[in-house]
Length: 256
Image (tube, rainbow, N blue to C red):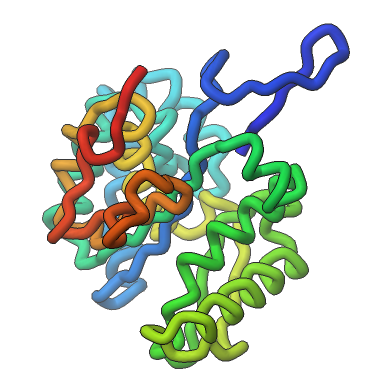
């Protein structure tokens, strides 16, 4: 969620330079099979990677084995390309799930005005869009990857308040109640969080690199990509990318 860095003691914009991304994204995965069965499929994959002489030769895999609470765990940003491809195949062929993604372009003026220059408010805004239309799901418990103050109880409750406000102001939605609960945990604690991580990485590649091949690989699982702040596509909800309005570099006006 980085917007700024410091240089010579001064706070300066960092978006788009020195590896700082131009977007921050959040994803919500809906696993449609038995949760423990899906977890075990990922755990088995992780154990195979950890015991593989080939994959253990990669420094990133060695580091993951040392740092993980339960040994190796997948993380798309760090995993070698060969491992990523194997995990994408597992996601596509062996696990029944879908994912929704919200994309927050890092627009400095919007960040300062709407989010008061606070990462926690930026996070809450994106999360509210993921949960605002979930009123029909009774007893919803959302597993959340821990992320400092952004995933504090107060900020998650703030996101829920924003989502409630959005639901009552949208005639197409049912009013969102307060029945949603959050379960915050370290990323490597629940294997299912890696589904969201890999889905987000694939979408991130489209926005940051103009690279669609990983998105195309699992696009059947990605039912929505909502590009929140793309005003150029607000007309006719063109900033909602679905199977009927597919995500592409051309659609998001990708350029570097």
